[in-house]
Length: 82
Image: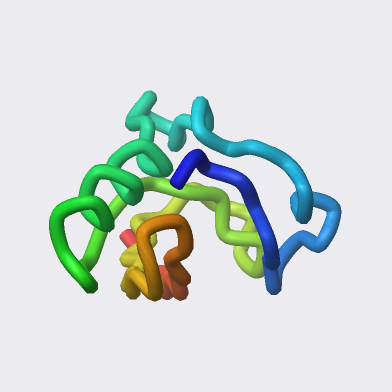
């Protein structure tokens, strides 16, 4: 697991990119946290601050992660509002 994007429902331009160094709006390296969590657990949750494309604001996003093998996991998130 290296932070490479294989699919993205919100922004297909990210497919093929590496997001390992991506930070949220408060400086949290949430992709790195995803990778650490998926190295330890088969599934789990992560919370971070992200731009909501519908409201155009920064909101708390809660993402569920599921590991499928040692090199692949899937994440699906929902905005929680502020």
